[in-house]
Length: 205
Image (cartoon, rainbow, N blue to C red; front, top):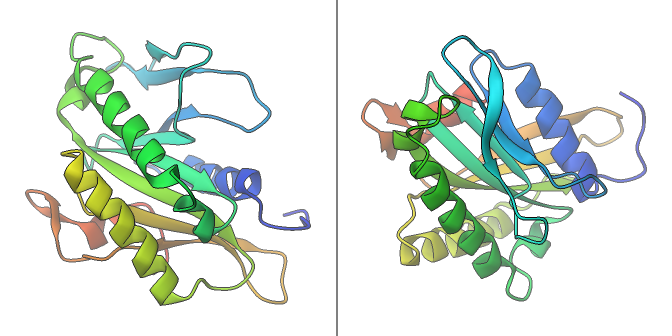
């Protein structure tokens, strides 16, 4: 991987996208690059053919990334920032959770879509993604995840949320993706814990 000056929001998101593209059981439904155009949420029909599920209004609030797994029956709606502190700065937490709540409502209404269908009934989870040049202190991670968990509970969204850290390992060029959660043994749905969901994402703990 080419050396980057710092792990910015765009780099953190891009690294995780590349990571997801190499996973056998996860698909990217939407990505919102910083300098890119507004886009569509895309799903795949039973034959694997991609198609439009939802079209954002040009000025509407959008998440940074949406991924889903048909095997795990999970949809992850992800907010990305360049640093973990930025996820809770000012009114960012509530803004992010409002986006997740609205989009969850929209995607749950798309059962009739040939490109979404049964995914309307999957478990929808919030995730936060950030970049780092050194491993984020556990207390900082705990504080951010706890803040989002509380906001999600108040918005009647599923918890716990997932944390994803795009970390450039000290002294090297490689950026790796780590997984964080406050409740690894909690069930996301019947037969699947949070730890197992993170494992399916190939995230180091």
